[in-house]
Length: 244
Image: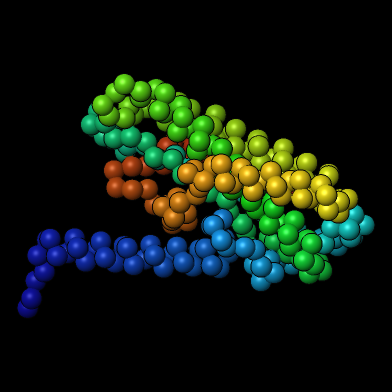
């Protein structure tokens, strides 16, 4: 009877784990959630929920708002799993992305104007993640300036502050959109916001969401040697209050 070597067993386990992770990633994203990616636009088919509260729907119709878009700012901070990892200089890893819950998003009436409003909200959420990354990256660069290698611990110090800065931007702009665009259907106001958000997307291009971040937040598995920061477990996948 053939017996696999320890090395081969480990390799088979790794391949199996990777296969499972890839399939979980595809299913998780395609079945319920979608994640902001460049050149991927919202479609009616992505709004898979059904309005359940007739009173709320009546209020939406009275305001001439015919869709509900459930988006949010997902985040995670991974830290070295052991004290030895910290001593060896393993640096924390942070992940942000704009996520859409397709099962909670719906159209009462399919309307191209409403769809472009949802897309603008979607892009605002992506800008929010880029602001968080930019602020955190600048802080880390300032702290580590003059050092030959990165200093661990710096990211943990400022992570929540930068995360909240991004979320606050998302909440404030989305509320302004609701008041100035969605409730009024003012095309000039829409174009003003659209222009500003497009400008920010371009200016913050280097801080765009990466596939690595989407994968980490989708399959919920930290890299080897890391764990989700224990004090942040309650915030994992938090959608904040960006929804309108």
